[in-house]
Length: 165
Image 1 (spheres, helix red, strand yellow):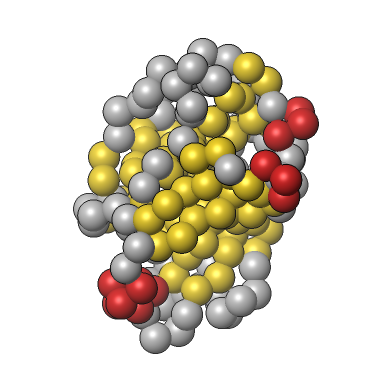
Image 2: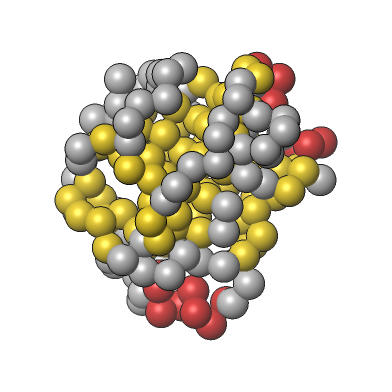
């Protein structure tokens, strides 16, 4: 199953440069952009908000509805070990069409299902998805070590390669 939220469009853009970390004693992912001035033009004048998959967050621009980066509480206690080959991806962003009433700082839940997490200790890749199988999907690198997977016009996975701290 995939998230029912449609993606209206893929847009070529350089990924947001920064540091993706997994803070082990907080059980959370954190993304810190390197260039804050660049973020102002990417986010726009209306600020940003999050699309939620449980407690995991995909940060998006309220004005442009484009994906920025990911972060959030996501305990590693139930992660499943699995070989995940480093995926090929295209640099860009995804534009979400279904939320025309976004407000800065007011998150929207985009999935009511439980997502599973697979982790490859050798490559460092983590895959968060509703399905254990790795479907044929298009991967978009939205930020450093951050990929969003799509099938058709649906979000199917998030792939991350954080630095563990």
